[in-house]
Image (cartoon, rainbow, N blue to C red):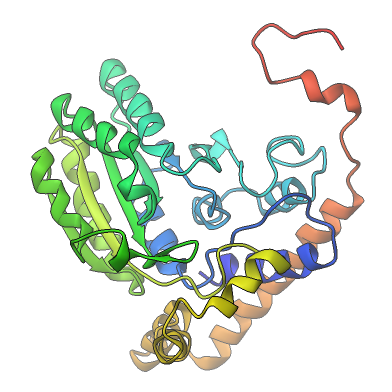
Length: 317
């Protein structure tokens, strides 16, 4: 979780310095969802992310240097500098890709899960999506198809309560979106998305069901996005709309930070000392700084790279 947080805090710094092209959408505050869910996977399972998915490949132990280089558009990036912040993919850790198209992940996840079922390779697919995407037709179609075909897929709904600036309570008549699972005939449960162990246990139960041939599950992770929808002046200006209750916002920041909650729990239970926690934090800072140096020392792609890895039959340029 620290690695996720520090990676994205560095991304803010680089974005503000004009070194990250395009948009950047951060999951600061949602690290327990990311890490808890991904830790329930095997190394050969599949994962599909969203436009807010730096943390998912990080949690899957992707190469930090390659991820940072990708954000900075360098040839050494996991997608050779073409994907950028919103379109990371790394098949080495089962990350099939992320996309800026809201709600597009679940159909892709069903395709991967169907392939696993046909091959009988024992792999499962974990797909993340948000409360905004939960109302997209493609998501409902994917969930219906997954239950009809009993696909080994887990729908991980990261419900941070707001889609850009539209509060979930204004876009759905049910507060708990996991109840929709009943309509498709799949198990569904909600969990405190700020509790990394609770997230792991819930997703692990779904993983065991999927791996045993029991089909899909929906796990709703109740969480909170600490920052605005995206970085940059345009998105940060959304705060002026006061769409979130400021008192509740401060409470989430001060009392519901998943990293503070878990580090305090580990220290209280004697699992680590404060000194050991600080050593871990410093180690991760060094790791992130190393990734930035690596990325900045790497070249940008040659213009001819624009046409490689796009089509199975390369086109001229």
